[in-house]
Length: 167
View 1 (tube, rainbow, N blue to C red):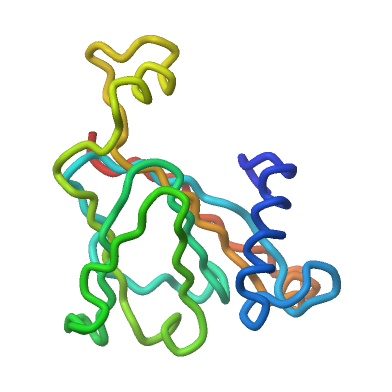
View 2: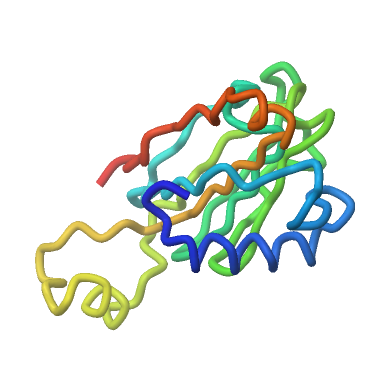
């Protein structure tokens, strides 16, 4: 699973498959396999601009909020879709992009300008070095699922490097 320890990746995969059985199917022998997990850290007030992930980055993409929160906006051909604008994804929550949405809707991720982390979290996250440390306001984990047949053909998953957006 890349830099994500297998024990964490497999447990998250198990939980996501239980929550999204019609999307992800069974862990053993199903159509989709977990390719890898990608961490993204964002500074307060920063944005991952509107985009559609390339098909080579997976058939189903699930992002789990680990720390802080973001607003996710979906758009059709880069025009905001009002009913989906500004969906809040907090720590412990997730969103999945698959099917029609995977190929037709772009998504933008915005981290609010105020840090959601308490001073206690900052100290814990940086081993007591909170003073002057740049602490991400949001950390998310994106899990990328690929068709088993794609992997069996030897066309390994394309990896997206970990991101740190802003400070």
